[in-house]
Length: 235
Image 1 (tube, one colour):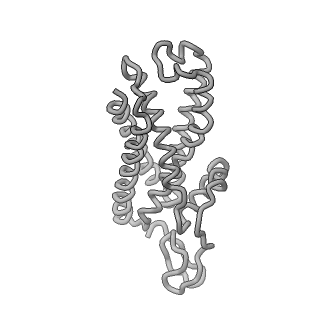
Image 2: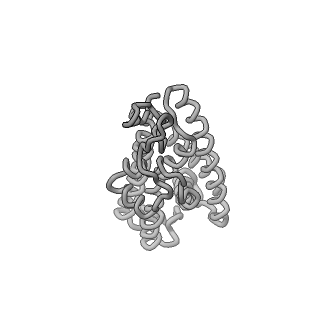
Image 3: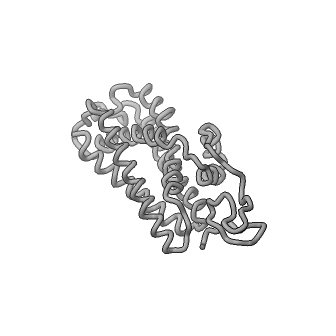
């Protein structure tokens, strides 16, 4: 096993998520039943490794549904922006919430199958992980997009109003400096989320190289999902 937790009492190697030793039943760590969302949001800012340790060890992976729901709304917005700058027409937003639900379903399916496949790939590579831990870690790596939805997108709406999804006039022509500044912050949000996926998978696997490879594959799949959604959801 390449990511073991060694029992201090008997020296037996256990899976890293194990609460009690499989041999002597001694406690390997503190018991974490539920997650505190507000504490986790704070930890994601200053101690993401500790945040993901809590996510992995928690018996109940709280708030997964709500995180995916809000992230799906933000991804729908991102897809609309992507459509705007890859097509010659404005995106059709009359089915925005339906599109968000479609993205919620697609994102959930992607996470499920990636976590399912990763469990077996990791197993044959010598890493003992649970599918639900991988699913939870990757879901919580999306937290920056919730910050972006709650704060950054609100600022964009206040500044640009109805032209935010318009090509005529484009926000980059209306207030170019501010538009490029906000676009830079959007890019930083994406990079932050990618970095969190690497940190979370490293906490799961105890191996940086495999965490980076897995994280790159996962984030490429997310990019592909956004490209597909921007192509078919806003015509």
